[in-house]
Image 1 (cartoon, rainbow, N blue to C red):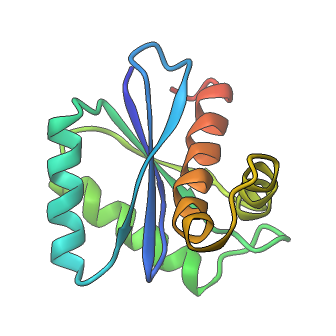
Image 2: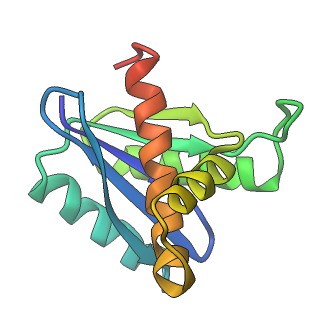
Length: 137
């Protein structure tokens, strides 16, 4: 199953995709948000062009597992996307994915502006990889 991972953010949205077997996950791109409609238009095009069969959106819970304002925004975003596509939309706990993404980028020797743009898509990789490994797919 080819899946799309999304690291939702108010300024940038990181994306990752899996291969058809659900074994490999790769960074896809980072979208710099301009408007809500433009973001949905771009996501709909990606879902169609990449033959995406499931979407996984990171759910930014607080460290103690409680909802925050950003959690509610991510849930609203997931619901809005779910109304626009036929594919199932799943939420995946994303606590500490940014820290893990930072570590992976450090290990890869990526710094500066390239690192900033890569951070969101790398977080999406971790979200999608975690979902696939959890067996929820």
